[in-house]
Image (tube, helix red, strand yellow):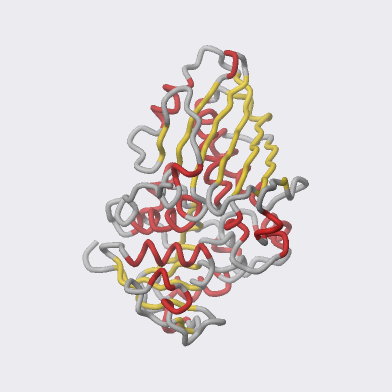
Length: 346
């Protein structure tokens, strides 16, 4: 690739959007050309987010296709249902698209409609969209016009389970994902249940009967297993701002497998997956602000149950960082460009 990538960001007023702007503002091969918001049009980005003062000098604009069509790539950091309305025109104009919402993650339009409560606006693009988990689809991402950036829970759960399913050493009909997320995963909108006084000093499960990320996770795990999987997925709201901790359970069908070696081999050379030493317990604070998934694998008591612990920052490897990683692949850049900073401590 030659020249700087001209980038547009649609919907850059939520937590995912501002995280994306933070990463793009320091990317060595990117020029932020346009940043859009219907509600904040005309205001300086740095006025809305003072953390970006001195880094982003643009003003929010209304999201107009003609303006966005001048970009090389457009990110959608918007609610579900927005990208699918605008993506076809941008693709026709030769613009590449990365959607950070769920519009293109599911391949089946009918299933998408069941989970998202409306008909898909461009079902013909679902087959073309590449699911942007680089550790699985790196080569397809390189040539993609349209990338569906994975969800936060699905990223942690899939990276945690993939080595076991690809190797065929666990029962695919019995998989359990017990996951905790920080409050930022609920978005920036005002809601009573995520007020400080409501969410602090407490933890609760939610959407146990069915979460929108369940079909996305199941789709990815079925591809890894080469057939259908049985998945129980229970998300929890944890009293922290950033982070996802996925505790994953599976039943071994091959008792002589070296689990530590299996994971180390599967993720050898992966720039953003860290397989920790045997006996480790990864912490969410160890990935805060970083585009990395840290994984530890355990076999309690030497029995037939595997326990995998996977942690990510839901706003980085679970959203904006992974989107930048996908952009780097799409434009032939070093995959680590703009993403090589360590986690924040404390």
